[in-house]
Image (cartoon, rainbow, N blue to C red; front, side, top):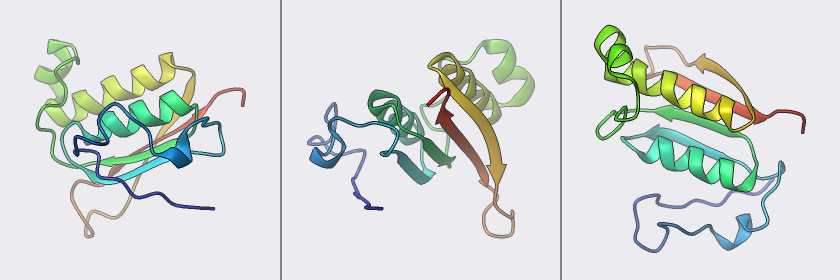
Length: 120
């Protein structure tokens, strides 16, 4: 296993993939911890573009949930609505999606979205 650490917010990284991930496949994936705002969405985009698994632990929800239906945002709040929307987007993209968590004594932002490509 090899790790490639990247800053999802840099200009150089926007719209590109690290050399190591080009060609992708299920043997490559994306992991994001405390992925603030749209960084979780960027991690999901990267995993989807290479067809690999994703594990993302969203943090702040600044800029997130804009695509989630108003009723979800109103009923569940921005954070949960954003993650429900992300779950459906991953499912529609061909992923099996589950949620996990770490103990809330570590962090109250402890939801983890875990997705693996279906049929692969």
